[in-house]
Image (cartoon, rainbow, N blue to C red):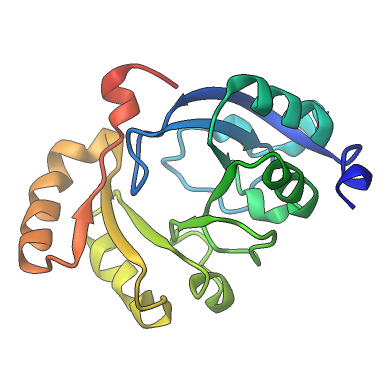
Amino acid sequence: MVSNYLEYSYPVMEHFYTIQGEGKYTGHAAYFIRLGGCDVGCVWCDVKDSWDAEKHPKMSVAELADYVKKSGTQIVVITGGEPAIHNLNPLVETLKSQGVRVHIETSGAHPINGHLDWVCLSPKKFKFPLKESLQKADEYKVVVFHPSDIEWAAQFLNELPQNCELYLQPEWSKSEIVMPLIIDFVKLNPNWKISLQTHKFLNIP
């Protein structure tokens, strides 16, 4: 089946080998594949160029798998845009056949497909997450742009798996405003942790 998948293609905005900057796997080397296409439309999105899938060249699964193999990575992160709008099975199964872990970063606004090793679900007010997607989350990462985002995100906690890891992450441009609130919240709710965009401090992609 994997061989039949190799010609399947995706709109790819960018792909690169770097260090994971956020959440549970912060500090790990990872190969990022950023797919084009998104219908969530976050006003603070720092990759708005990814929204229009037609703007980005198609790359086959075979091409992407070759880049991943040559990098020597042990982790691949599929992100976007909103990667779950695509059929990810061809890409995920091919990458896993190479012996790497495959993670996804998604808003959860679409059904999550593919036998993924790690699901980072980051809910957005602009298009609410699906219950079925919330139930697949290994990591629940809330980007805090406004103080109300913390309370808003809490409404979905009962839909998450019991062992799901919880993170609050300040939106980069609002960090000075919201970080004190996040710190106070985590101190009162120690089941939550703080995620920082460490790749921006390191000045890497």
